[in-house]
Length: 181
View 1 (cartoon, rainbow, N blue to C red):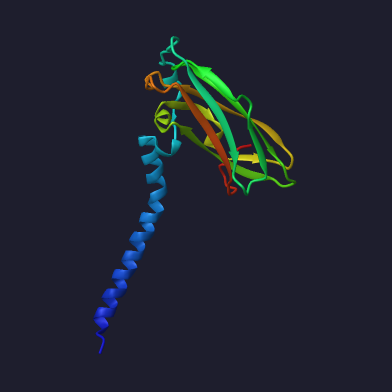
View 2: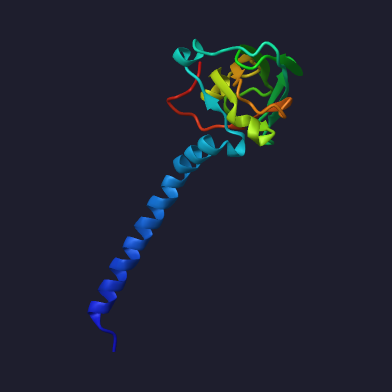
């Protein structure tokens, strides 16, 4: 014979366990983002603000070559192309790179760009003050847009890093209140 008190206790424990697992799963995304930003894993780069940018010191004796790459996730009917393939930059100085994106179908689409940097260590030293990846991008049917990223390479980047690749991959995003116009 089963005791009713044991069933209630088991039900309460399983309900609590389910709630804890749900909460942990919900918290993983922001925790992962913080972890990636701190460690530089997954190519996530830092963000720099205007007050910090004014204090930068330029290393005009050194150059780092940046290769620009662009990709579209398979379920997004867009074309994306970096307007320049390579750029030689001085660490500590701001530069602007542009990408051209085009919606290839007769439907408004919202996309989100995800950046990545290789080699992985370089992601710790690439700082962006402005980037199309900070917000979702909305393209009307057949629309073409120029997208901008304003960045600098920190002058403390290791000397053995002479080149890096900055890559963006666009994914279809859900429409929300944070849409770019």
